[in-house]
Image 1 (cartoon, helix red, strand yellow):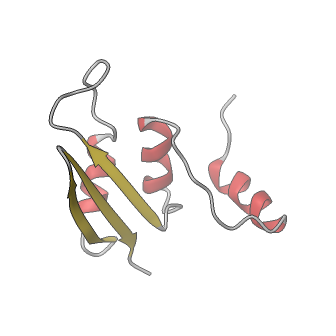
Image 2 (cartoon, helix red, strand yellow):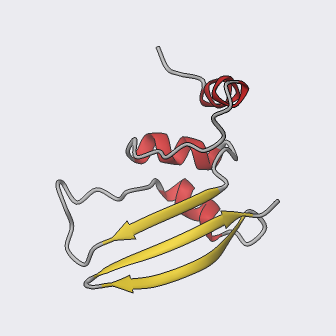
Length: 91
């Protein structure tokens, strides 16, 4: 079955774990964003595709990040040939 992300994060918080680093791939990342469970999102992109060239996040997740009512782009930096964008959820 699938893990209920909200329940999992609540269980972690009850144990004192209030920060989680997720590198679970596009589906996990998109689910965290779509369910308003990600307070901060950091995305690294490279000029050349890696692996199969699939996007790191779904179109829905990218649309949510671009919505100023939900997320704010707080940092946009070029790191060598790569780019790092950091978003914070609007509270």
